[in-house]
Length: 248
Length: 248
DNA sequence: CGACTCGTTGACTCTCTTCAAGGATAGTGG
DNA sequence: CCACTATCCTTGAAGAGAGTCAACGAGTCG
Image (cartoon, rainbow over all chains, first blue to last red; front, side):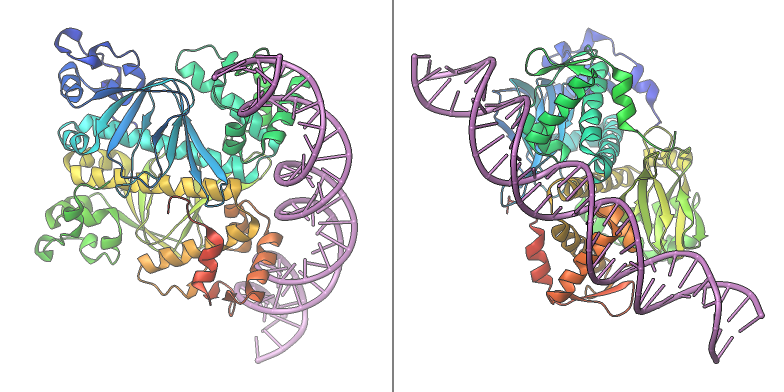
């Protein structure tokens, strides 16, 4: 959404800030970036900071959506399950990302911490009341949701029409672009998720992900030093495998 | 989103309504349902009715997102393309559905009319200004977008993890549920899209879709009389193939 | 040190795709 | 009105890409 970009760019004077939000390291990455110091103080009154160990569940598909979250530190995998155990990872969250927009009072998907996780938690009812008084936050939330929807469309293209190699390349490019947005290096790329998580995200098996990474390694597009970390040797070569869109 | 359901249920007195919106047959299905008569009159001042032939393009991926639309009559397929022509249909729209929420001032996907189409068109700039004054409409739009996002998650599960038979069954169940929402019969099911469109939606080929429909026909789950119409003989049997979610 | 999980690699299988052809349907023009 | 044709749908046979099953190496934790 294009309106109100100025609001996002206007940093509020820190004088009036109180509470944990004042010290928030990822505020400029999050939906909170549109708020003035005064507004932020109000939001701060309903927020609580939460810490979770790696592997713990943040939200569970089907359970009452009582809280919404902002990721402060760490990463989250979002997923849905079929009754026989088949899993589809629908996305990954990183610092600044918002979690928990729900439809029917229940979460539409589950979310697990991939690494030690720090969140801020908003009670949903209170946040909704506050939203009515903070139209800029609501607008930002609409933009965020629209953004996620656009990402979902890209993922549908990936899942429906791309080959295994294209999927893995797309995944690496996606991760690196998100790293850059968070002002992290794109090349010693942090990959906090397991091969199984990657496979469940890409609609493949772990074996195919592994084999494809080996192919990319042999093609000198990437290199793997430590586990959970991938060096991108040829970003353009990877992007060539991705084929973003025909519109270009 | 759960707040404000009462607003959606409150029909406005028709006395103050003016213009085309007053006679809108699908208002209660659309985002406009949250508006009072007065508010609707305001919205009506910026709206134009558009008619398109089957096959015509409503919006084009990558082009400036100058307008947003509401489907009044007919249906639309939304899709993205890769440069080599591979297509992924990301969704179908029916009367009452909203079209055109864009991120970067350009449409994120293309949309073609599947049959003769009637739309109402909102100039985006004007609608955004109006949104600031109609918080209920903005809230409804957020709910609509969240709903679409939830549908996108289901589709990711379908594309990433379901078999061809499950995909086709899911598609038929989806269509029939949406028909019921529009107060249409679920069983002589209107299927305005071609086999190619269905295949591009389900991440399959037309041949596989055709073969799978034949299987379902032989299993006495469906019957096909005329083209573009499918009789659902055993809705529960179909749903058993779908496996909605493990949360249940 | 041993048990476990995770990642990699290999051999084989299978579902869906590809390639090909025939049949039904609808639109067009004589 | 009917032949003509293009398009859509269906069906068959063969092929390929990813899945399945299985084994092994490497790192990790108790």
